[in-house]
Image (cartoon, rainbow, N blue to C red):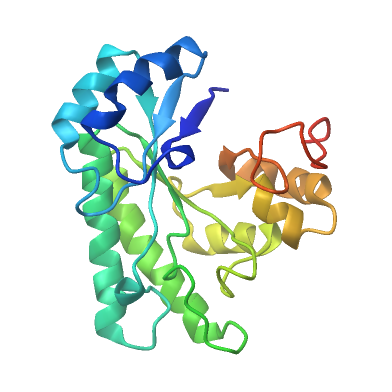
Length: 224
C-alpha cells in the first residue's frame, strides 16, 4: 500500500507555484500526489512530470466530468463528448506518468434530474466506461469510478451499487474508488460495506466525516 495526497487540499490548478510544495510533500513521507486533471489542467504536463520525478513522487489523477460531457445524459452527443473527454484525460494521465485515474467518471458533477436513476442511464454509463476502459488499457491506466453522496450525484451513491457497476463494465482495469467522506453519509455501516466489496476496490480517499484530518472526527479508522 502507498500513500499520496490529493492536491485539491491546496488547489485545483497545479503549476509552477506548487513546485516548492512537492519537496515538502516528499519530506512528510508521502509516496505520491494526485492532481485534479481535465483536458486543459494541469497546463504543462511535461514540466509537472519532470518536477514530480525529480522529487521522487508517483502520481494518480482525479477527474470530474463536465455537465456537457455527462455519460448518463439522454442526449447521445453529450454522452459521446463524455467518452471523448475521458479518453483525453486518460492520455494526459499517461503522459504525466500516472497509472490510475479516479473520480465520478460516469456523470456530470452536481447534475440532478429530480428522479431516480433509470435503467437506460445505467446502460449508457456502463457502455461509456467500457469504451474509456478499452482505451485506458492500451495506456496501462486503471479507471476507478467513485460513488459520491446524494448531494453531489443521484447516479452512484453506495459501494454495493459501485461493485455492481464495476462488474457490469467487466474490464480488468476498472475498480472501485472508495472515499471515507462519502461513505460516512451514504453507508449505514461503512466498514462492513467496504469489507463486502474489498476485492473490487482499487483506490481509496481518506478524510474525516467533515473532510478534515483523519482522527479528528468520528470515522471508524480502526475498522477501515
